[in-house]
Length: 213
Image (cartoon, rainbow, N blue to C red):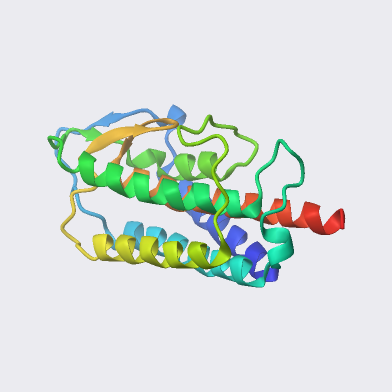
């Protein structure tokens, strides 16, 4: 549990730092006369990779240490089991990576700049108090722990391979996020933070089940 708290604090510290250097009222779109680099700088890439590494470690720990008896139990008929939460977040990871790849096939826009929305977007997705209607199955089927580990490894392997290309123009290709327009890099931030969000949900489910034993 200590590792989970450390992961959450690490993400929030990254958000706070990014906010301090990216503050802009109302997160409005900036139109630049001179185009900035469409590729990621070292800090942007490190932020994303750290999010993914920390969530990967935390998810694996939770999956491997939860008893089979609790894995598919629901706190109530209106709530998801841990297996359902995992299915949802891993399905979302695959779909969001596909979305980014499609966005990169659209025409580049070197004048639009949404960089100042990075930290705001992370904080919105991470906040479990902000409810968003999921475009995915409202009641995802449960996923076994072994299947979840396999799918998580495949998902993160695909992400790592994709991000190994430092020439990806992730900053000048745009699409939609649940919170409005976003560049391709920001969709990847949504992916990473969404996984953290639903890992927190899994931990909430586990605490409730253990309390009600």
